[in-house]
Length: 402
Ligand SMILES: Cc1cc2nc3c(=O)[nH]c(=O)nc-3n(C[C@H](O)[C@H](O)[C@H](O)COP(=O)(O)OP(=O)(O)OC[C@H]3O[C@@H](n4cnc5c(N)ncnc54)[C@H](O)[C@@H]3O)c2cc1C
Figure 1 (cartoon, rainbow, N blue to C red):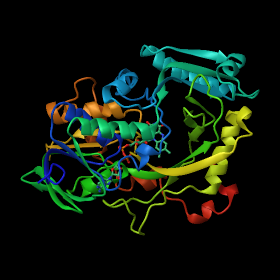
Figure 2 (figure 1 turned 120 degrees about the vertical axis):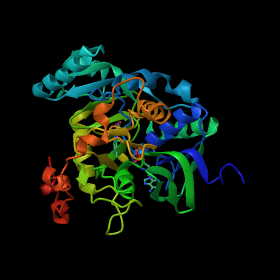
Figure 3 (figure 1 turned 135 degrees about the vertical axis):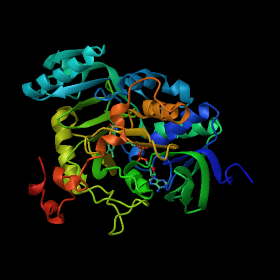
Figure 4 (figure 1 turned 45 degrees about the horizontal axis):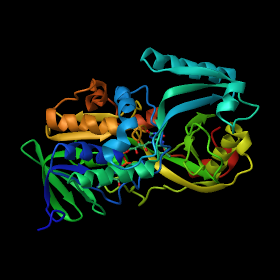
C-alpha cells in the first residue's frame, strides 16, 4: 500500500485552507505523520480568494504573525510574495483620527507608525488624489499573495513528508470512549490519534456530528481586480472601507463590505436548498469599483478585469476559535473568523503546540477558547441580525447598504 493509500495518520487535519495547511506543516516539521483531507482542492475556498492582509493587531497571535511573516519564504522554501508595511488612507478628518487611534494601540505594543499629511500621502501613494486628507503609515504589517501562499504551504508540507488528499469530503467524526478515533469520508474510514478540524465555515457542522456546538456564520464577500498599473513603493494601501493590495504585476486587488449573510451549511458545505452562492453580484462589484476610484482617483481610467466571491467564516464576537477540547481530548478545533490568512503562520504554530504539548507556548490563547460561547442562545444569528437577505433586497441597487 502506498503512502497516499494508507487510511490512517497520527494526525488528520480536515481542511486544506491556510489554517489546516499551516498546522500540518508545523506538525510535519516535527516529524509527525500528518494527513490533510480536503473536499475540493487546497486553497479553493477563502484561503485562495482573500485580500492577503497580514496586520491583525487585535489578536493575541499578532506578535507571532509579525515575527513569522518576514521569514515565511525562507521557512517554507517557496515564495509567498509577502511585503512589509501598510498604509491606511483617510478621506475625512474623522477617519484619520480613528486610524491614528488604531496606530496608537500598535505603538503601545512596540510597533512603529507615523501620520502623513495629504502631500506626504500622495508622495508615498502616487494613485492617491486631491480628496485624501492624510494617512497612517505602519512600518509593520503587510500583505502576501494568497494563492502563492497556499501553494507554498502545500509544497512545504509535502517536502516534510506530510500527505494531502484532495477531492475527499469528511462526512462525520468518529468517536469511541470519549476520544476521536477517525473520520468517515467519501473514500471510507480514516483512523487517527489526533484530529485537527480546520474546515472554515463548515467547522461547526462537522463538530455537530459529535454533538458539540460551535457558532459560525458564513458570509459572502467579493474582490475585484483591475488592469495593471505602475508599481507603488508600498503594495498594501487600504481605506474607504476597502482592503487589498497591489499585486507584483501591478493589478489592484480589492475587497471590503458589504458582506452578504448566507444560510448555515451542512458538513458537505451545502445549504438545505442545495448550494452556497459564492459568485459575484454586479451591484456589489459596482459598489467596490466606485469606492476604489474614490480611494485611488489616479487609477480611475483602468478597467476591472476580474472578480470573485468567497465565503467568510464569522464567530459571534469576530475572534477565532483555536482550542484543544477537554472532551474529546484529542480534538483541536480552529476556525479563524475572517482574519485567518494573515494569522495562518501563527495559528499553525499554536495548533502544533496544542496537539504536541497541550498548550500554546508563545502566547495566551485562552480567549480563543470554544467555552466562551457555552451560554450563547442558539438563535444568536437572528439576534445579531446576521441573517441572509430577502432576495428582493438585492433587486435594485438603491437597496444596497452604503
Ligand atoms: C474576499 C475575502 C477577503 C478576505 N481578506 C482577508 C485578509 O485580507 N486577511 C486575512 O487575514 N483574512 C482575510 N479573509 C479571511 C481569510 O481568507 C480566512 O479567514 C481564511 O482563509 C480561513 O482559512 P481556513 O483554512 O481556516 O478556512 P478555509 O479557507 O475556508 O478552508 C477550509 C477548507 O476546508 C475544506 N472543507 C470544508 N468542509 C470539509 C469537509 N467536510 N471535508 C473536507 N474538507 C472540508 C474546504 O474545502 C476548505 O478548503 C478574507 C476572506 C475573503 C472571502
